[in-house]
Length: 352
Image 1 (cartoon, helix red, strand yellow):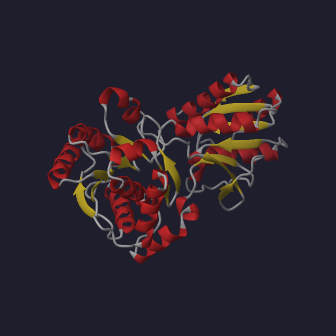
Image 2: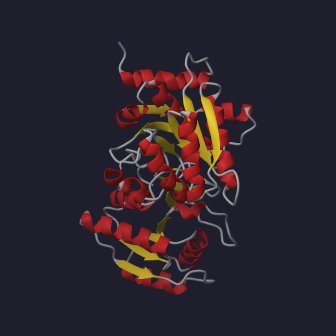
């Protein structure tokens, strides 16, 4: 008899090929279809429906991205007798829904909610939530892990723009570096959105840094790069996923490093992108994460014990292998290192 993980992978493959299922699982889809988050909700719903491809009986509910909507959605799912729920993009909605779904023993697979406390409180709440979305702290954790390894022999500086986002990224890297026995040669907070950062670059040069991490946005990093080049300061510069924002007046320099998430449309399973295209769905935003979440939900449901399967099994999805840890988070951090090739960010080699 094949191992259970093989059965779950096979069930997912059946979902992808569109073969008829003997007993369709009943799955709820909770998304905001009204209000300011409606576009994200539609992306998630369309991706989930494309993955189901007639392999599951789906119940869609608009949660409105509100606590009231989340609770109402949960009650509708219980009444409909669903076995598992996919969806939610807002913390308020999922936190209101989970106590109700917990009492009905209905697990939830969410590709959208990143709030750390959602899973950090699992031991206390007992909420049956499993998250395909990265945790809110996954980016800074990846920055620390990837850059301390990559720059272990480098003279590096760390600066941030004073925002919560920038400061947390910078402090996360600094803390990880210190735990690894590394110390930056320069640490500072700069004033963002200036026409030039010549003074900052001068202080970095004086400190002797050859590598620089910037907790800030794309425009500020581009200005720092331009001024460093003009002053003849050779710097390897890295930032977080804010580097994916739209380009400003100053272009990024080729070779800029970014710790960010893959562009799922570029890395996803071809069958998935084709399935989305057949449904007229563009593979952007939450479409592919929604597709992958539905694949996980179907495979878990057909196992006969969805919660048990989610706890212990590995699932093959359009965006890669998925396994959950004991809190319901992804067992591996999805953030990766990329470099800018002058036009777009591409996966970096171990050497950056």
